[in-house]
Amino acid sequence: MDSMRVATNLLGNCVAAFAVSRWEGALDLGQAKKALNGEAAFVPDPDRPATSADPVVRPEPVRSAEKPYH
Image (cartoon, rainbow, N blue to C red; front, side, top):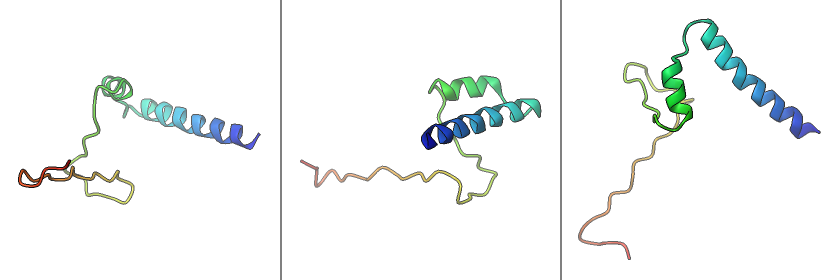
């Protein structure tokens, strides 16, 4: 029973975020559709300083040509 309350709360918060952003004119529908369809990747804004809420981007490990992995 408690897990259904958590799922309902999560879904309600997601819908509310979209509703408020559209109400205030901050929602770019074209970009939102691309992001939800997996066509657009997250690109951080270079003018905004990073915060602890930002996703952590880990670089790919560099593989040396001299010692290939087997």
